[in-house]
Amino acid sequence: MVGENWGDWQLSFNEIMNFDPEFVLALFYLIISIAIYGIFIWHFYRFIARRDCFKIGVCRHPRTIGFLKYFFAFPFVAFIFFIGFSLLMLFITRYEIPSVLSTSFALVIAIRITAYYSEDLSKDVAKMLPFALLGVFLVDPSYFDFSTITDKVDSLPSFFTQIVQFILLIIIVEWILRILLTAKHAVRPPKQKPLSEEL
Image (cartoon, rainbow, N blue to C red; front, side):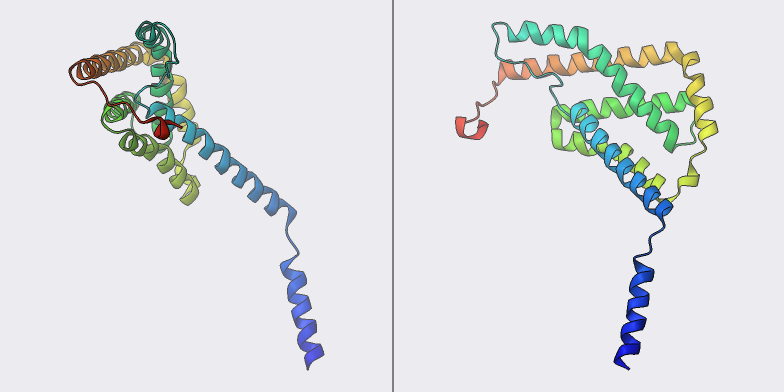
């Protein structure tokens, strides 16, 4: 009896260890894809959720350097933010292009406003859509109609004027927020952190 049970157990063990190479390879690709997407989104949403997108190092004229960075570099950053969320919206919604652009604009503005209130809150808002997209893909990959998405992406250049208008509005809102922050610091300077907290 013991020998028969041992033989059955050995047969089951061999069946368990008999992996399908194609299945293992597909599973490996899925794991790597999820990990890469997660790492990319982690860096993306943490960057957009920071109140100060550009860290100003120790220099003689920090305000001048900060002004130049937000004047010349932030428009490019705003473009990346806006286009990034627009592309995510194209995947996860059935909206037409104008609705996708306006919703992406509203989301970027909401993230930037909350960044000046609480960066933790801003991070939660910024990561909501990207990880919702991942969740939908894992639950129902057939939800995505890639031919329709490709057609919408190809039609984006025809909305160039509207895209530029939204990016300009994002830049204007950012400058208003920074002016309000500067005025607040002028009235009530921020408390300096103890050296032990900074280390």
